Image (cartoon, rainbow, N blue to C red; front, side, top):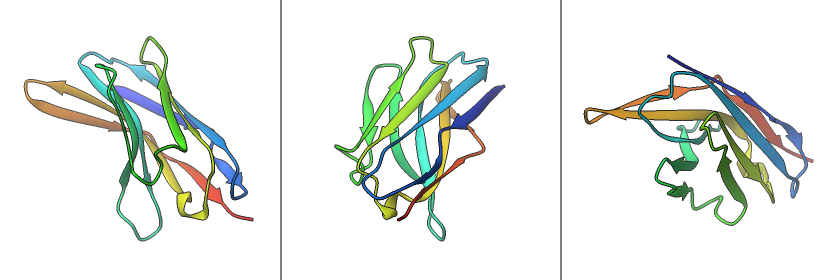
Length: 119
């Protein structure tokens, strides 16, 4: 099993910055990617940023140029640096770890951390 624990959320003013981090424990055998998703009230969960074991990164159009995803060499921590935050970035942010085995993708999720952008 995999356990994911997020940290770094909070209240920030528009234009401010935050860094979210996620620590993974348990087995990461067959890991394919790690990343961040978010869910705002009344909306579906959406991709924020991901990074694969092949080094490919993917960002939502709305965060390109503002957010940067990174991970440690052991694939035990993934972080996202968020700059230029706007109220539209307010959401619960979830860490994700995906494994792929025999053609099936297995997703693991953290409990989420709240990010609120408000003056």
